[in-house]
Length: 282
Image 1 (cartoon, rainbow, N blue to C red):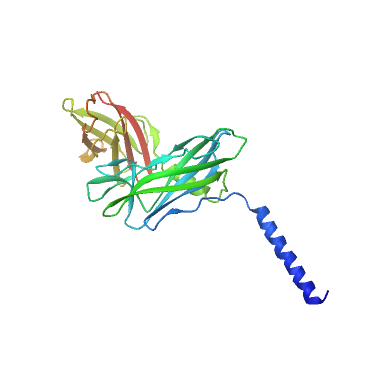
Image 2: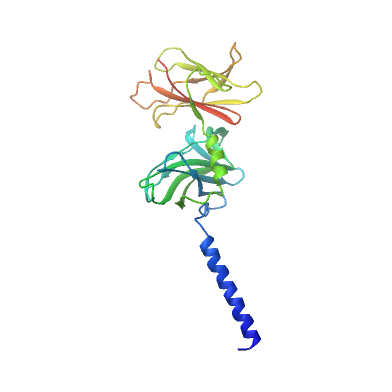
């Protein structure tokens, strides 16, 4: 065998060894490919193990083009809340969605509640068999809006546990989910009081929110089930104790429903901090 042939054979061996080494070193991906178009796309992202052995943490990220928005679980005056379907997953008992604190915006048909730019929904995934890997598959039906709203379906699949390259991003999204708090509990952000003004069936509810003085504050109200359509709370001045007041009418209950004594969920947002308080108004 002549020298050129020897050099070619050696080079072929090195290349083959490099490919084998890369394949052997390659682990599971950190995220699924993006699924969507220029307006909106989704992907699944791996996080860190969460809690007891059956649980894993992941995230579903939505990427939106400039000027486009999507909706929170309660979309406000208009819009459609996202619908998550994990039925195509394997070795997954359930996947629980965390909802980062939203913001309100005008969408041409009223005031809506949701997200712009990018949003990561943290997911807590419980495996059927914690000794085996899982495959998380999601079909997301959601709406994206610029001047008009467009229904979109996104699909993504990711093997879990996934590589942890994006774990910090998933953890940061988890920190944006409102923490559960009690009415009147002390804290930099607190829902101090909730009072009713006027008689049933359509009284006015006034909520006092305590927050740092220089921080913008917003408040959202939800009924006990998703078929309620409460109006968005509006700023109603300042309380004597320095709290920010918000007010809304108890309107939008499903037909035939007595709203008196219903369990309402109030979400207060102040900068990067948010809390969720369950209240019953009699």
